[in-house]
Amino acid sequence: MSEMISVEDVWKSFDRGRIEVLKGVNLSIAHGEVLALCGTSGCGKSTLLHVIGGLEPPDRGVVRIDGKAPSGEAERLELLRRGVGFVFQLHHLVAGLTLEENCLVPAVATGLSRSAARARVRELAEATGIAGRLDRRVRELSGGERQRGSLVRALLNDPPILLADEPTGALDETNRERVFELLLDLARSKGKTLVIATHDLDLARRCDRVVRMRDGKVVEDGV
Amino acid sequence: MSLWRLIFTNLRRHRVRTAIGATGIALGVATMLSVVGVLSGAVRMFERILRSDSEVVVFERNVSDLFFSNVPVSLADELEKQASVKDAQPVLFAIVAAPERPVITCFGIRASDGRLKKATWVKGSIDDFRDDGEAIVLGERAAEFLKAEPGQKLELGQQAYPVAGIVRTENGFEDGGVFMPLLCAQKAFHKEGVASIVSVAMNAGHETSEVKEWMKANHPKFSALENEEFSKSYSQFKILKTTAWVVGGCAFLLGGLSVTNTMILSVFSRIRELAIVRVSGFSKGQVARMIFGESLVVSFIGMIAGLVLSAAGLRLLKLVPQLQGYIDPSLGLTEVLGALLLAVVTALLGALYPAWYAVRLKPADALRYE
Image 1 (cartoon, rainbow over the protein chains, first blue to last red):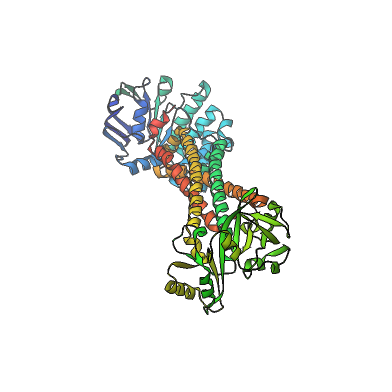
Image 2: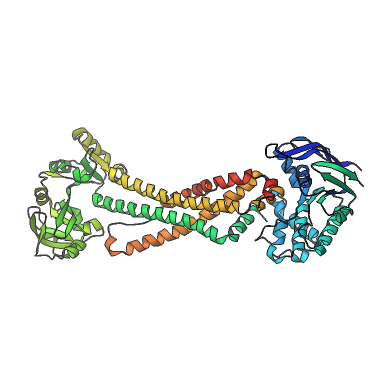
C-alpha cells in the first residue's frame, strides 16, 4: 500500500523549548491503515496527532500527507478542511445547536452547499446510528450519541484521514466498545486512514498496527 | 447552517449577556438622541424667534451673543428704503426680572412687528400696544406665572408697566416672555437708539444677496446673514449642538464599553468551541467575522431599542407642560443616521480586541483550556 502519512524526524517542544514533547519521531502510515498510538499520558501521542493534522507546526522535521508537506497557513487550513478529521476525547459539540447543526459546522468553513451538506450528514448519521437524533439539542443526547455526532462532524468533508485522540476516554464501557467498533468499521468501509491515540491496549490490539510511544519517541512499531 | 445561524445561536445561548450588551447600546443611543433632540429643538425654537416672517438677520459683527449686539434702529429705517426690502423690524432682546421671577425674556419690538399680528390675542387688542406707549403685552404662560391681567400694572425691573393684553404663541420663549414697545425697552435697558437685531423681509422678486451686498458695502461693521447661514454660524448654536453631540457621544462610548465587555465574555467563555470551529476548518477571517457579526447584531438590537426609547422619551418630554414651546424635541434623519453610524462603529471597535484574541487562539492550546 502507498504511503498516506509520513512523519520524518519530527521534534516539538513547548514553553520556549523548555518542555520537549516530540523528540525525533519517525513514522510511516499507509493509505487505509488503522493505526493505534499507545503510550502513557504525556508521552506525546496527542501532540503527534496535532502535528500530523496541522494544528501545530513541528519545530523540526517534516510531515507529509499523501506526499505533500503542508507549509504555511493556507495549506494547513486546507488540510484541516479537507485532509483530516479530528475526534477528541470530549465531543466539543456546540451547546444550543441541534446535533445536525453541529455536524454541519465544517460545511460552513468549506462553503459546501446546504443541501449537499445535509445529505452527507444524514448518510453519516445513518451509518453511525444517530439519524433519529439529529434534531435534538446537545443536552438531550447521551454521551455515546454526542461522540458519534463528533465522528459525523469529523467525516463531513470526507477527509481521507481520521485522527482520533482518546475518542472513547470519556465514555462508559458499553459506549466505549460501540464507538470504537464504529470508528473501525467506518474507517475500513470507507477506506480512511485512521490514527487512534489510546492507552487502552485491548482496544489498540484490534487495529491493523500498534505503535508505542514513550517520552516523545516511538519505541515499538509492530503489526 | 450558516455563519449567521452560528452568530444568532451564540447570542441566544447567552440571552442575559446579550441583553446587557444591547441595553448598554440602547441607553447610549437613547441618551444621545434625546440630548441631541432636545438641544436641537431648543435651537430651532430660538431660530423661529429670530426668523419671524423675515429672510435675513442683521446683527453686530463679531459678538458672541445676540444680547450683546447693538444695531442702530436708524439702520432698519435705511434698510426699509431699499427697493429689495419689504420690511425691516428692529428687535431688542433683554432679560428682565419680576417679583419671584428672576428671568423673563423681554422682546422690545415695534407695533408693526409681525409677531404680535400673528399671535392669537387671548385678552386685549393689538391697538393697545403702541410704539409711543408703555403698555406691555404678555405671553400666555408669562401671564399665568406672573398672575397678571390686562389693566393691571406689572413690576418689571425698576418700573411698573400697564398690561395691555395677553397673546398665545407657539414659541415657548415668546409665550413665556414679555413684549415691550421698542422705545420703552431701549429706555429700560439703557439701549437708547439701538436694537439687538434687525429682521429683514424681502420684496417678491428680489434676492437676499442684494441686501447682503448693500450691507457689506455700506455697513461693514454689521453682518447680514440668511436665516440658515445665521443658524450655522452663530456661536451659541454651535456650542449647543457640539455639546449635544459630545455628551451623546460619551453616552454612546459607555454603551460601546458594554458591547466590548459582552464580546470579551462571549469569547472567553467558549474558548474550546472556538478551537473546535478552527479544527473544523474555519479560517482566522471566518472566526473574526463571527465575532464582529455577533457584536454588530448586539449593537443593532441596542440601536433599535434605543431609537424606540428615545422616540418615546421625546414624546413624553413634549407632554411636560413646563417645557412646552421651549423645546421642540424631534429626531431628524441626520440624528438617526448618526446613531446608526455610531452603532456600527461601536460594534466594530467593541469587537476589535475579542476578535483579535479569538483569531490568535491556537486550537491545540485552546482544546486543552480549562
